[in-house]
Length: 489
Image (tube, rainbow, N blue to C red; front, side):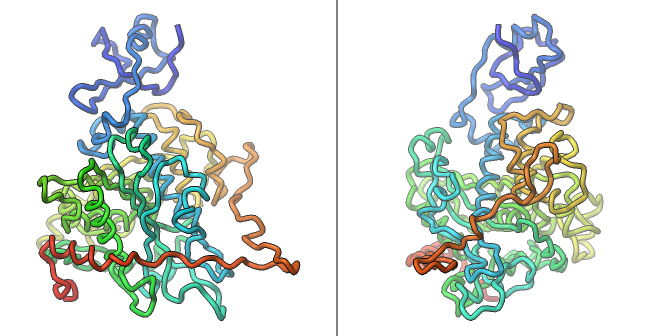
């Protein structure tokens, strides 16, 4: 008889003896019982029970639960292995924003994406994910978050004076992947920051009314609001705000695939996680995920990594009312998720009173379920207080891979390459022989020209905005009964 894999190998089986105490159980649907077995503590009878009915549960049969329809009840502790894989997969969509972004201040292309949409996933070795880029997202850098944006050093020629590449919208197109997922998935990935955390100091703790549908009590941190809603008419990449870009594109895709099962999944790390939550709220608030022909809603899910608080308690309550599902993943030692809202937040017993009664202006609340991880549980990572390590996305995905449950031993479940941890930081113990900050372009992107000189090759201009962006955004406003005039007030 084969042995049971230790530390959380999950099996589709029902215990013959309900009194067995070593089983952790949860239900992901009415017909599904999953148990966790630790082989180091099983006797022969219990092992036979575990191995009697081994059956992998396909994602297509439980994707609604994985997307949070039951708020991930019973799936996080112990960790559902299918959920673990999906958290990592969406985390890699967010990581792709970093890997494709040009951070080099000495490059005329600083602040843009290195790759064109048709080559994006191929260049990042993600072609087998089965998705294609639908459009890129841009934002103007002329806002009150100066330390977030990457700009070229003073040069005579740059790709844009005002814009920064902020992420992308992608859609599942591979039929095999769509079948595996159980639906066609629309992914939105927002860029954060790899190592520069100075943007945190730009947060003013000033709440701005969202007013997307006229409710002035729902408020958002002003820097996030500006980044999401501002535009720059003098820049062709920023003639539409990030908000207008995302709403128009989601509207277009929902209309294009109106006869199919769909999901909208939004992901991001750090400040990108804030934009992920803000855009998810906006999509639901503006009814962009609503199908008027069938009177149904397309599920909207956020996989948030190391994200800060975004809005006030009213914002949190409104997200809950709209059915936006949020899973927040972070390292317990990371300080970014503690901001803003150090004084009044969701942990404060009288938050609702101070917000409603005395209109306390610095009240913030996290949204959704929380998956808190601890880097000290991983035998691969150093003990450090370096925020660049504690806040690192690749390190966080490593922790997700090894997390089995609150009282379970760290177990390297999917054998995700630990060398990825040191891609942009120095978090791995030296004994593993992985150099810190190892990811870089060959020769920093320089190539030798025909005349023997080393030059930065000219890049083809990135796509700007689809020609039907204005049309689809107008459709969003029309269906939500909102006018352009009301937005400008």
